[in-house]
Length: 484
Image (cartoon, rainbow, N blue to C red; front, side, top):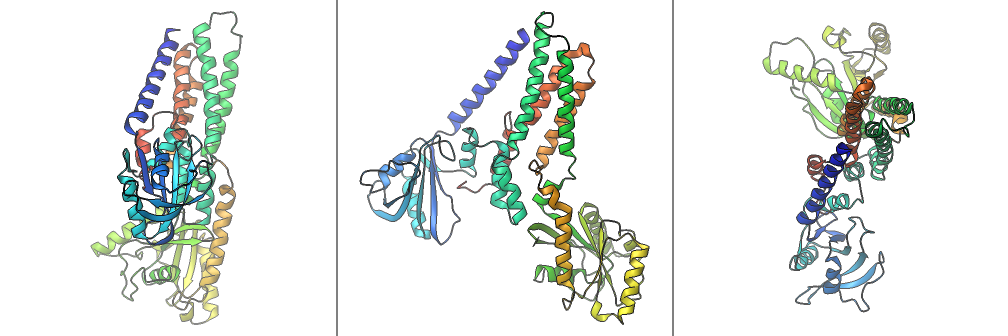
């Protein structure tokens, strides 16, 4: 009983400190430009805090006032002290807690000229207890007021940064609570098991505790452990798609790797030269292939060398090969058709081969022989022929590569509980480790068993933000713009 009282007191103290932090450090009404800076047809200024409606009362010529929430009013915007008309705008009122931040909020949809935006922000600055929002502070207040959990905030940040259709779909699903619901359900099940275990500790000699109750706890923990472990066994697809699929272009010098990169990028991203060893460092280009984010990397040519700088480039090429998700080996058809052993060693089941300089090949028979030889001597998945210089065969390659990406990732992307953050994976692994420790505990160490369940629940709580995550929050909100 004393142990339970101590834990409850600690929890209340932690909550009190958290509430004190929220009240003391964020009392003011904040404002910011929430749309992109620069000339535009419309700019959105967002205001949030206890004095938000004061901005409406002092800055709008509003006959009859603005009373209906979430209804757009067309009003003149004036300076709160001089009365000078600054612009004509749409004004929307969002009373808390039914707003993005959970506080009273206002949106001013003004004209997007630089002078207009500057004058409105300047007028807000002169109002008492109004200040410019810090980076990500609107989202931070939404989190503090339990409008969003940590996974939803991370999804929102990813949605703002999404560059492809697949990234948008993943981020939107997470921003709408796609991860919060299952993680919280798992946490509630662990807490229930923990409560039962602590009841056995506190009232173990009481006749009201049924026999075999811990057997059911163990069965529930085993089921949950297997579920989370299966969730972790996803080949890191979510993180790969979120960060971009790494595709390394590798091969011997002068095979046309840089020319292929430039053609895919539709610009001169890499220096092209007939001199072997021109590419010394890794050159990256981001592409959108069929909605998938792809980072294509041009690497140094692989060969034996005594040049120290070229050797460093080869070392970096090999490192990028090891970290890539897909390898494309480029070989030339204008040589003697031999494959350097260094190059042959990197061609495995995850490597796709391109025979370049098809326009320089002697005849189609030579090409066919080379394809047959590659298929016989290596485990390459697919062999394409093309000319990176003329563009012949490039469109076919891109079409088939998009199909390869869809076949490789589409089924996994459909998983509604896909892990997209390394942080989530780390905490889930901690959770599984604690559950395994619980299952391996001797029966007489039931107090330690309860603590392992607590650690498992806390690990899941750190994903959603139910327990202390201040260090995570500082990094997360740094990804948002000032007006978000």
